[in-house]
Length: 170
Image: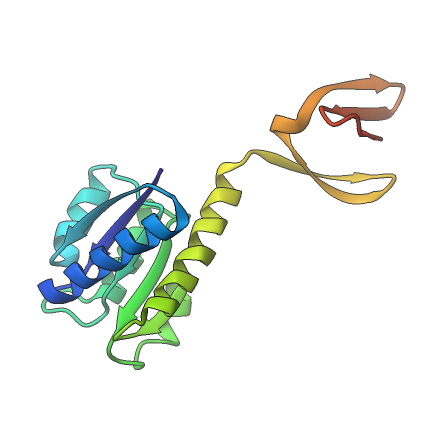
C-alpha cells in the first residue's frame, strides 16, 4: 500500500485531492494510505519523526515556509519520495528541478491529469519496491527480478542464473 501526503493551505483543494485519490483508487482497484497537512511545517514535523511517504503532492505558494523550501528539507531525509508540485504559479517550475521533483502541475488539476500523474508515480514506486539486479549476460544487459531467481551457480569464471520460468542466463 502506497503512502501519500497532501500539503496545501487551502482546505477546499485538499478535499478535492482526497476525492480524486478515492476515485483513482476505486478506478484502479488499489488501496492508498493518505494524510493531509495544512502547512509545510506540519508535513516536515512528520518527516523528521521518520514518517515515510511514497508520494507527496505539495503546494508551492503557502504562508510561512513555501513548498519549495519544504521540498529541499524533505530531500535531506528522503531522496526517493516522489514530490509532485501542485501550484497556481509557473514561477517555480525551473527551481523544482533542483529538488528532483517528479512533476510540476498547475492548478486546478483536472481528473485526467491527476490520474496520469498517479499512474506514472505509482508505477515508479512499484518498480523501486521490487528487488532486482542489472547484469550483462551473453544475450545483453538484463534486469533480473530476484523473485524470479531460483538459484545461481559458479563454474570456473562463469556465473549462471536459473530462473523460475526455466530461462538460464549466463
